[in-house]
Length: 365
Picture 1 (cartoon, rainbow, N blue to C red):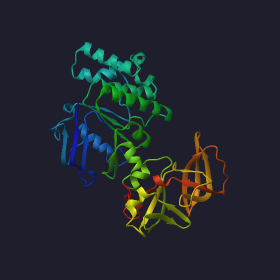
Picture 2: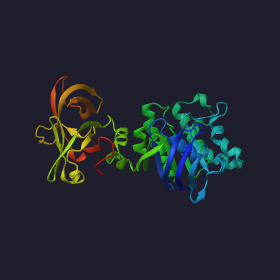
Picture 3: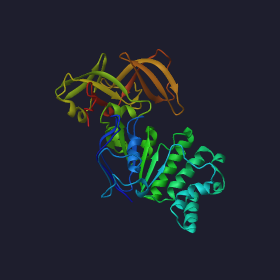
Picture 4: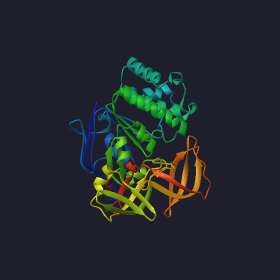
């Protein structure tokens, strides 16, 4: 097994472009870490550096206590699953799964045992004599997983392996990958831009932007306590809503003000804001943190005009014009509203987020 440690790692290309800057990250043995971010954020570069496919320009990379900066890929004991599956079209499923072991000249009976064991665990035993062209996308993905599994690597790397699958299949494959990690007890590093994959799979998430780590934490930590507006915006469906305004502090009471909207913070949230009277801020309200209660108290109400109603099965997304801003909330599917209705929603003030208007950093831990 392997612990992975980046120390001040930077990837700089000859044209001067910096794909990754000063990365400090420890991935614990047997941990499932997800690198999350938009295209170009440096997550695939990080994965390729672990695999040995990209050289480190500055800094160090360790597997356990061994510096692997100059260790070639085939000596790193890693296995990689790609977005494109990368299967040999002229080989059978059995031959595709066995290929890496055959190249390493493993005994035939050992290869056969490993291939059939992996096929059984992935429920593709009946497909072993077929070729990739005869398989569905989900079946090909299982073959790619099987090819990596039989290696029994110290580190399992996955580069957006589910992005080519349809929505329903992605959900079932997430469950299979989660079970695979549990059963293999191996270090997993997984790259994705899909927040749902990150939240459901990860022990910890590394959120990245423009080659720089924005925040590292458990799924709950990242979602409930985002370090800045970028992190808050990247997780949530619909995305978090923002209202720009100011803080008003009177004694131990703190309120957010924007036009006719006044939202009061509970005492435990207000503590961090007591010295910020008049501070320009951006208030973050997650889509699910409202409900429609007639008895909502002053300091809890978000009022606006309905601009859209979008049923999504179990609930509905409601577009609301609030203080000139278009906000989206998730509400009970049984609520009935028409375009142009003026409504009041009760905000869960214990779950409000506050960010500095200039730096976009969170002001509440």
